[in-house]
Length: 106
Image 1 (cartoon, rainbow, N blue to C red):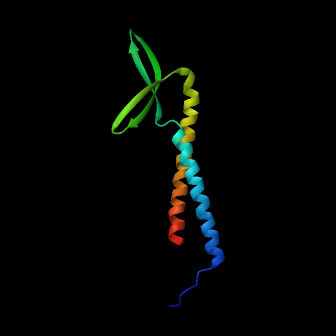
Image 2 (cartoon, helix red, strand yellow):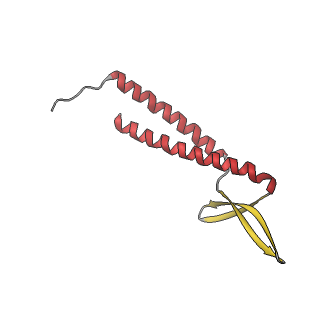
Image 3 (cartoon, rainbow, N blue to C red):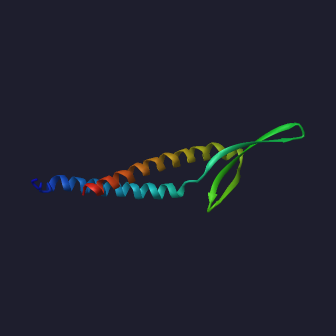
């Protein structure tokens, strides 16, 4: 079986792509760390024959689940931020998978 020599051009392109992916992953990690964690939930409470609803943010701190009350005025903005965080986390996972693949190739 003949041994194929490394093509310098292809190797350089793969190395450049690896560096680009690592930079993007680092920037996404920093952006994700600044965004709010957790998920937004709505609870209904019954008090004196009336039903009241309120929103809370559910997240984990260590092994414990933490619930934080969210005022009505902040619900829409928080929901947008959480969806943006989830999208960035998905993109980050794709970049990490790509980095792993490129490292195998190199």
